Image: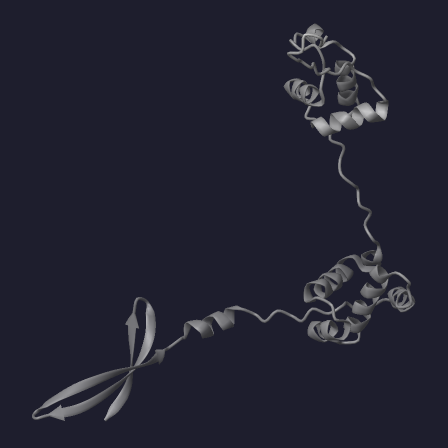
Length: 208
């Protein structure tokens, strides 16, 4: 004969099948593991709710009109987004939209999420602010003043400036500027400064 018994191990309950059998005058028991009473994966499944499918929100009359018009837009930026929103609003799943439009899943999901959050603003291309200026106008003026000043007057034992020397000196004054940027400042402002002249030497007695 066999029956089911539940054992508690480390706070969790497990099912075991117990089979009784006789050996001579003694009755012995054979225990066989079956399964946990509450499987861990089932417990996790109960706690985790399935994520709702990502779909475009219900379009307003204005949004429907705009999306329909944007499907004929000459620019791919607006047209692609209109196609994604249109297909999603018609009930197509993310995978279906990717297959129809040959778009990356991440792109499709991003457009739909942004549309649900921002509405028609998703069709506006953000302007690139560009790279921030590395130096301010005040710092630029200081660099120009260094170039117009003899190095010795600034306590530097140079007879002339170079792009690198100006860059190194400016960094000591708290201005981060590269030698190439110094060159651009000189070119833009058409500055002239004393450059080092190379000297030539020769053993020829007639060389002077």
